[in-house]
Amino acid sequence: MRLDIVTIFPDYFAPLDVSLLGKARRTGLLDVHVHDLREWTHDRHRTVDDTPYGGGPGMVMKPEPWGEALDALAPAGASRVPRLLVPTPSGRPFTQSMAAELAAEEWLLFACGRYEGIDSRVVEEARTRMPVDEVSLGDFVLAGGEVAVLVMVEAVGRLLPGVLGNADSVADDSFAPGAMEALLEGPVYTKPPIWRERVVPDILLSGHHGAIARWRRDEALRRTARTRPELLARLDPDSLDEHDRQV
Ligand code: SAM
Image 1: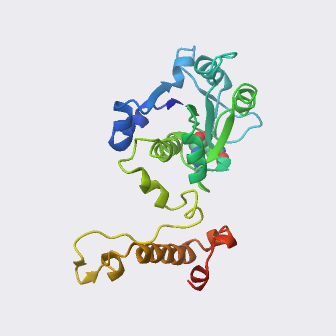
Image 2: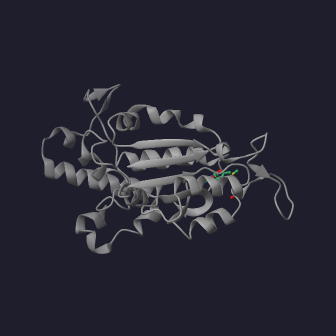
């Protein structure tokens, strides 16, 4: 998968050389290109922002450098276009199912906003020539889009075939499409079986795969009911058996 990231802080993306994603880059599963937006400015100060029309505090990112950046990275009339992702608190919420959808794309282009955001005409114009998603990480405000892009790249990158050692592990994750879609994963344990007088639940040492799967589902249902009860409303009633309903 090819990723292009446009930012005024290219150094923010150093973590993409570390751990799973770093390995994915080295093995060629991820082809990441980070671009400095200021490359597409033409004044001595390499200006990317200006005062907002209508007044008010803060600055807005100018459309010209963004327009030139998008023209350079996704030229008009090219046979292939990337899917453009623009992080913003006013976008649609980023979810595991969106991560799975993006993992099926060949090419993603990320535009990192700063200040009060990017002049709105940039997204409007980009939509005329490529698919565009404005995406929010949650109901809070970050200082810039860089951290949001790192989050999205990690969530998408770990779903690419070959990136995780055990591909099955993503199917059991919280929010994984399928049985876990509206559930949080329950507690997990490793050796030793007793630590500071706290014991691992017997069932996990029993070797009974069916009973362990049942216990895990019960714990997932309980944890979801406890911390994110609103998710339970999204469970398909037909997918619940008698035991689920009792939990
Ligand atoms: N004035 C904007 C508003 O109230 O919606 C906030 C701008 S914020 C200070 C600057 C940049 O941070 C945004 O353009 C966006 O790229 C990024 N950002 C902030 N919060 C975000 C969130 N919850 N999700 C995704 N990106 C976010």
